[in-house]
Length: 368
Image (cartoon, rainbow, N blue to C red; front, top):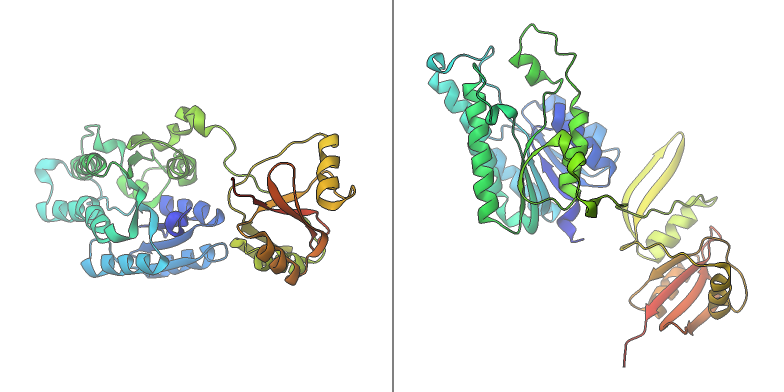
């Protein structure tokens, strides 16, 4: 993954769907840029999210040119973006007036926030978005259904959907999604139905899994209903998305020093609470190797000269075996056996870090 593939910008992230999505991405190690008009609520969201991820919070109105420029500059400082989520929007007058009675100055404001601002933000972020960027524009069923009293908000979302469709056609390397999250138990939903009980609506968290599938999956550009995305998940997306090996270690600092500093595994997420400490390190591509006991004994004999490993052994492909072995040893790992040429075409070194795990470092030998 390139540097911007774990960076996302979410507008309107101080509450509702924006905050729910930000929580999930933060928990998955994403770096975030978030905004909202309410500075106090946004700061509370930032403080919460910052416990899990790197978060830049910029209060302001996405319809304001200077604010959009501040977001674009933050994206450049972050190293670029993989995902931008245009979630911020306004309902307009509440209760919603009929179109013949709709104040045009207020309708213009709705269009400025719900239609022009998302496009303007994408334009401002153009240089920060990679070739495989994903743009998610949050829409509504009111953008495709003619609900009486919803002409202002609904027509703004219809315009956003057509804008999204044209953008997808013009930028075929991007994934552009216009997404209906469904009715949600949010402040905007309550404003749309003043005085009514909306407790029967699902919380915004119910729409987040679908958004995550669009962000991390292989869906083509198009219109989606967030709560139906999982039900239409392509076969290629049904398997595991990541292999994570969890090691319980007695010497936590020593283990972190060995794997993070010695092997150069990038830190994705770390935490320290009264209940315990942990760190998630990125180890590149993950594979699961299954071998029988005879093969395990053969590998140990080749790499270590004797049977030393238990049922689990870690193996890391490295670009320079000598330098990686030296760095790993300097960070506290013990050399079990000198590097060897293996029958399967690699140069391997067997080491044991402070946690006692058996670790193979291997460098594929060049052909010819």
